[in-house]
Length: 223
Image (cartoon, rainbow, N blue to C red; front, side, top):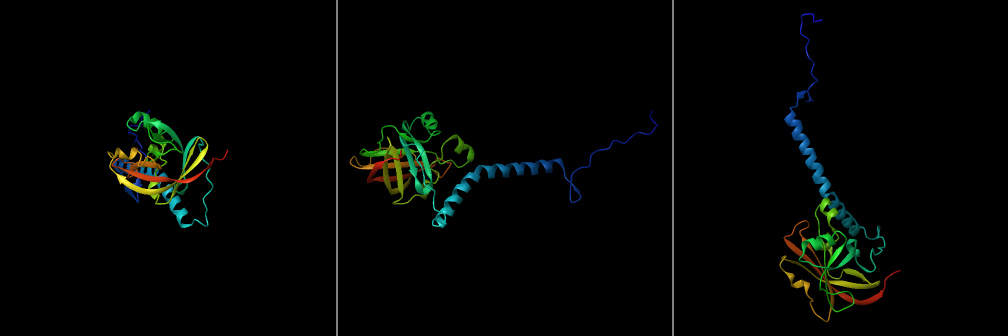
C-alpha cells in the first residue's frame, strides 16, 4: 500500500574523474582513442619486432650468432641469410595477372613466367610483397620486407631440384612500376637473379630491385 509519499528512484552514480562527472560522450571518445591505439600497435608491432631483431643482430653479431638456417624447400626455394628470409618459390607465375600472383604469394615467393631457372644462363625474376601490417602479412607473404637491408656482396641462396646455387648482390635500385625491362635477362651469357618488392613497404609507389650474379659454386643440397 502507498503511504501517500512517492518513492524516489535511485539511479546508479555517474562515473567521475577526480570528483568531476564524465559525460557519455567523453567516455565514448576515450574508448575510441583506446581502440585506435590498439589497432595501430597491433598493425605495426610485427614490423617493429622484425626491425628491432635485425638491428640487435647487427649490433651484437658476435655475442648472438645467427642460428643455422634450414631451407624450407629443396626443390625450389630461396634463403637470404642476412635478413632471415626462407621461403618456397612458386614457379611460372604470370606477373600481369593479379589473381594468379596474389594466390601464389600466399604460398611463397613468385617466379615470373618465362624468366630463367637456376643453373642456366639468364635472369631469374622473383617477386614478393613487403606488407606494412599484420593483416596484409597474414594474407600475403612478406618475405622481402627487409630486402632494403641488402648491400653489394650480400649472398642469396637458391635451391632448385635439390641443388644449391649461390649469388652475390651486384646492384640495388628503386624504379617505377612501369620498368618491366628488368624481367628480361641482363645478359644471355650470365646467370643472374633479380628480387623485386614494393617500396616503401605496404605501398605500390615504386619497386625495389636487388640484382645478384651467380658465384661459380654449386654443391648438392642437404638431404
